[in-house]
Length: 67
Image (cartoon, rainbow, N blue to C red; front, side, top):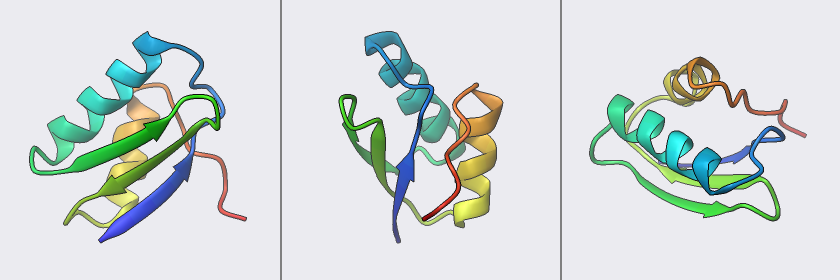
């Protein structure tokens, strides 16, 4: 399943690394495509969206509410 997240608190390379690590700790098989300028991340994972939101939030990058 592919999910799109808007991550308003993402602003630098360290943020990208922390987000990548958080998602891959939750699902080692997950793949990410991150657009730092757009503050967005596309995640392909077998986990439910809620599990990914929890991992991102715990890492300090809570996703914005879906539009």
